[in-house]
Length: 207
Image (cartoon, rainbow, N blue to C red):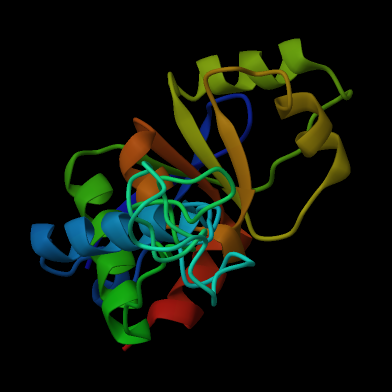
């Protein structure tokens, strides 16, 4: 069963905490991490604009002029892409980028990502995230004391002071535990959880 130290915001070790083997100690499956990241990035894609092809523009129906004798190239409709106001050839057509990924696969990918951070020694737990004042320098000092260079900070319950203090800290990202995702876990070098976040994650991802 994985065991981690619980720290305060000054970087002092307070106690040890046992983590769930099912969530933080499972086998790391790289293919699930890949599937989860592809799914996330695909769902961030914007819907492309939709253009009108020759079947959707107005006009057409009657032949514009007779086939022979005019000296012009023959034409069957004024909706042709060769004509002004005609349809668009091979234009974007409302392409959807979204993908689907089963919930159990997403949960398994999260467990793999968390277990990988534990194995690498890149996950730390704090007892309570509190600051003396709403100052970015205090938040940065706390991260330095905890040895966090580029952390993903995950909170069990949102706190306005921590959210405001971390907003201008360029090398970190603060999210609520319900927004925890594989892409951010892999993107950031370390993960910092509070005790409430650990309990919520174990409850959410336990098999």
